[in-house]
Image 1 (cartoon, protein in one colour):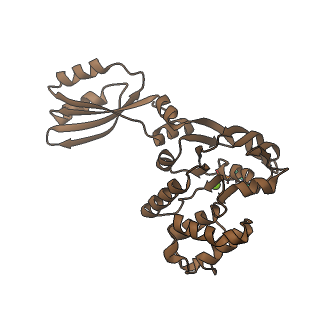
Image 2 (cartoon, helix red, strand yellow):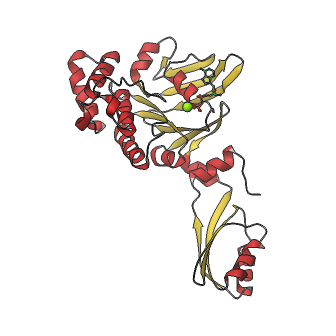
Image 3 (cartoon, helix red, strand yellow):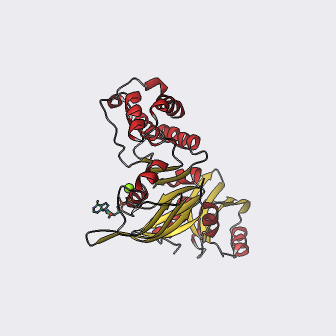
Length: 311
Ligand SMILES: Nc1ncnc2c1ncn2[C@@H]1O[C@H](COP(=O)(O)OP(=O)(O)O)[C@@H](O)[C@H]1O
Ligand SMILES: [Mg+2]
């Protein structure tokens, strides 16, 4: 559905994108991850033909983005970083205007506006001016305009930025509702969000693709394991066991009476379980439970992007 080949983007001498290549299949939901300034917005602007790439090629559904720019744009819905909302219009009028801009047939415009008002839970505020809406509602209006022409490809640039947790949840649920049968690209630096929405991530760093993998594969590759040891006994003695075990880094130590829960991280190939258990026994303590924790995407991301590997 989307083919990107060797795309470069220069702003003057500054290379914002460096030889970016990837393909996204129809119906895939892909997350663009990366720190601020990584190049996510620039790449999205090239995919939506808002910017021209300095070199390289982009195809949307078999059409070259430069030669068939209008055709490509008709297939794409785009929520920019700062959606261009007209504050003095009502929600309904703004969506009607967006429908005409996107060349939705006149006789279908009312139906499409009603559909997106419904999809985005905006019926209650359809006759209110956009200026008086909360940020969460404004963002939903921005998403509504992005799907007004029922696009096959949906590109959402940081859709939950600046929202409170409840608004984030509502926007996330909305994205899940509208992603059906579409190819979706969503950029964010909220990793838990990507884990819940996308199946694949492209991690961008300094204008280059650092990682392009399914999230499940990425999580399996993590070279750090985390365990929780629940140990019963004297706190001081148990603390000493963990502090003095070289390959183990204690991350937290929570006690309830004489039962202590110690969260640790170790390298994935760590095999000295027996030695640790012997030390616990020698400390006259009892090992009650050991749990292996699944790595979160956030941990994987931090270790890959900032190279903060276990020391
Ligand atoms: N129009 C522009 N002119 C000059 N530099 C730009 C422009 N747009 C983006 N940049 C630079 O390109 C880099 C990537 O920016 P951007 O794509 O906005 O990153 P992200 O969306 O990942 O935060 C940044 O260093 C930014 O300052
Ligand atoms: Mg950005």
